[in-house]
Length: 228
Image (cartoon, rainbow, N blue to C red; front, side, top):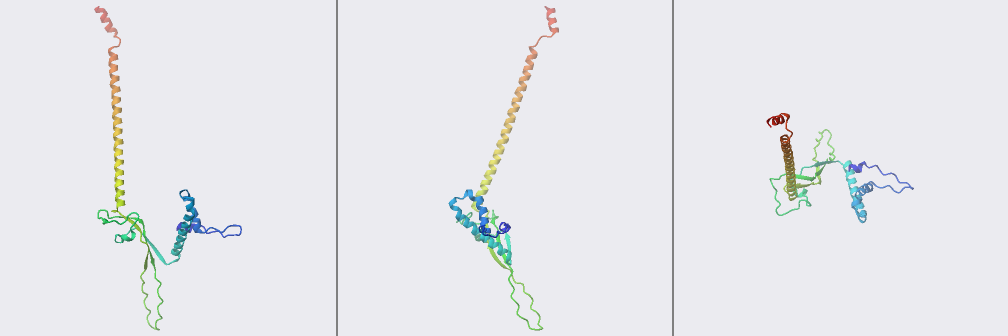
């Protein structure tokens, strides 16, 4: 509704220019410019008419809310006792085993509840007799009207429970993948340590063999000659 209100007013028509588009038609054109890849050409005329009708309804509601004596109240909390009013038939259809669960008491609000409070117009007080005290003004009760009862999904519904199971399974798979990555990293580190240790042992053995088979010192050669 704010987007509709923010649109500039239509330009006046002239003889050289065609009649300007209405505000609803401009909204329909903007929506169709985004949805056109998803809409078949044969469906565009009907969709345009539906969008124009929806935009005209929204404009009418917006102007009525601005000029009327209504106070709109939007509430995101839904009353469990009024479940039949805010129940989503698409996501939570009635079933034979439809029992309220105390283990899952929460209600997920899909669309808020909207009510309107209207100040009643006080009736004109009858003319009082001369010299009498005026009647005190009585506070009239506010008139409450339900605009939309809201739409919700209870936590114990089959859709929410199935979603929780899928979420738990997803988290379990992520945790298993994390453990597998840690085990693979440890195995790689172990192999690197073993390979590094094997290279060190081989180099030490080579140095010992080289020192044992190297040339004899001069002292040892002289001692050998003298003994001979």
